Length: 241
Image (cartoon, rainbow, N blue to C red; front, side, top):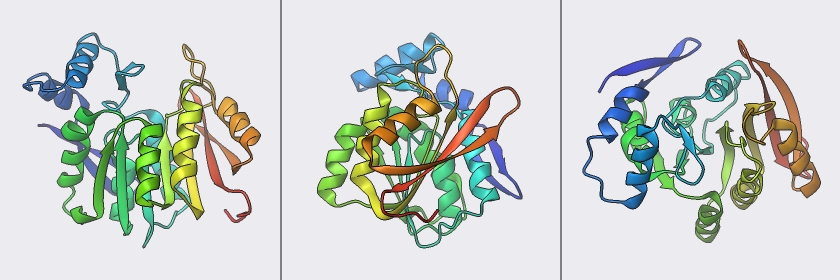
């Protein structure tokens, strides 16, 4: 399949191109009902269909903005256990691996996204220690239970463009609360408002504020046509950012 460079200042992450991946998926011998539903959605040109495909086959602007933010702020991943939540192509987690994370867990809603895109992209990075990566698919609330049972804890959690619907707020909070270590830093990038959906950065910020689980600092980000923000979150009682 064709590849491209996703530039992150002086370094580059090489990934397979979205359109090439989607065409590859369409040639599969589908063995799961989920795959068939995803394929139907893709055939109709739907990047997002609630409960079927949640945008995993697209590199969204928020992902690129968060990648640049991590570089500009020189966020330290060395020796950290990192979760790339709603990973899609896996760019954020790959960045963490390239910067010496102890481990990176990649999560996406769809198994076929993981199989067709995330895992191949990780394997494409010659400088990445592949044994440091593990891969999970499914709903955040279900995974929160599994991760809690396993005692998984993360020092850094990265997530972008994952709050475009308000029904996702509680699911995301459940996952974040279940797996964030005491000193965890969570970096979340989203649009200030999602037209056509009811999610927004302020809506999620207010939701988090009401739960009294995490502190939030908001940093406004600018893209060419749309306003984005980054929430830097930490557990109450841990004030350092």
